[in-house]
Amino acid sequence: ISAASERRLRNWTSAEGLLRVNARHRDAGRAFLPFAPPSAPPACAPQPGAPGARAPCFLAGDGRASEVPALAALHTLWLREHNRLATALKALNAHWSADTAYQEARKVVGALHQIITLRDYIPRILGPEAFGLHVGPYRGYDPSVDPTVSNVFSTAAFRFGHATIHPLVQRLDARFQELLGPLPLRDAFFRPWRLLEEGGVDPVIRGLLAKPAKLQVQDQLLNEELTERLFVLSDAGTLDLASINLQRGRDHGLPGYNEWRQFCGLSRLETRADLRAATANGSVADRILDLYGHPDNIDVWLGGLVESFLPGARTGPLFACLVGKQMKALRDGDRFWWEHRAVFTEAQRRELGRHSLSRVICDNTGLTRVPRDAFRVGLWPQDFESCDHIPGMDLRAWREAPPPGTGMSFSSRVKVGVWGQEPCVSEGRGGLVWGRPPAQLPPRPQPVRAQEPLRLPGSGGWSDG
Ligand code: HEM
Image (cartoon, rainbow, N blue to C red; front, side, top):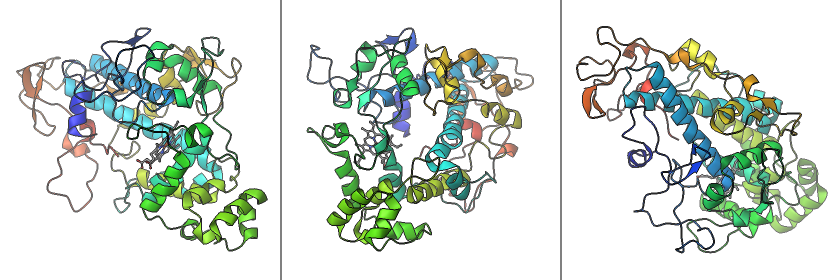
């Protein structure tokens, strides 16, 4: 997140370090994402009958937040979680400045993203065997690992997700019955009003929990809402996501399918019979080879997508390898990985490990029952448990004694800060930001870049990428 977008996203007048919320709309008392500022030309589709050709989109850390209701709902969930955490942390630590509360809440949200992604989501995608092989257990920060996201990961392998997208947005009422009927994606792209005016976040979250993702089948990899009716802000017409993915791979000069198989230690496919075996689907293999002539020519996104799945996985061996290697690098090469010593205290790590996406849903929506594992489709009502039984973290592990001799509150009398020695203004009052002593900094990799600002764990020293 750039400094400019941080300026727009934060609520700078709150004492608790909150993010801005929508000033015009509420969701049964809960916050919605704010709208993009009036200076940005409105780019989303307006509600029928509303004035103007375009309406404002949601403002979030990522410009794609309004693409589909599910994505907007998830962004909203995390906005609410940040504000819930910041408020609770500030209540536990009255001496914290607004900025400390903001940075500590941001740090916890970052850790939860890491936990939910690597512990709960990725193993379901790779299957247990490939997860063990390519990711394995955490053994600590490794400064020799480059965590940069690779071209093949973002342009091909992780786009496996496009084959899991359901053509309909499923919104369910409190009894898990269809609300307003199913909504085709074509009528949902970049339409924030669908969330604001058609029941809010809860029906979308219920749909995500109780309805399965699209079945990944080899003879309809992407649904037609994506291949015939996709809409993105940068383009006036409708697009084809499969073509975009293939073309993007070529734009980026990605080597072909067989090169990546070899990179992953898998056999190169030379014949029609080899491809038939890798896909376990003769007719799909034939259609692909009729187009491409030889397996060497196959685009890596398509080749990886049609491989038959590993046991207990949602990908074949090539994407399991490419996704697994990337996830391992993102974890092991991150000096601020949540499990790396001194990023959190031992007690905080223990509490973070108790949290889950289901708990985040319980804490930030009107749902009172959820499946314990949000990534496993739940049958209503038998697979749903009361939120009272869903474990979560105890934030008392974040309680800090106020600095001795300063009393409980953050006041202009505060003179000595240990954290970056940066003067800061909170609610118009000057002071110094308090944090943990530098002795707890995780080791910095060498060489140190002279321009790099000193970023402590508690000050949001966290890769945005
Ligand atoms: C309805 C849901 C979705 C829509 C409409 C959508 C659409 C798009 C579009 C239009 C792009 C830009 C393509 C380009 O210009 O190259 C893109 C990129 C991408 N998508 Fe999706 N997508 C969706 C869901 C997903 C899911 C579920 C995943 C993975 C689990 C995923 C992974 C990616 C990745 C990794 C990129 C590349 C991002 C980058 O490099 O910046 N998408 N998607």
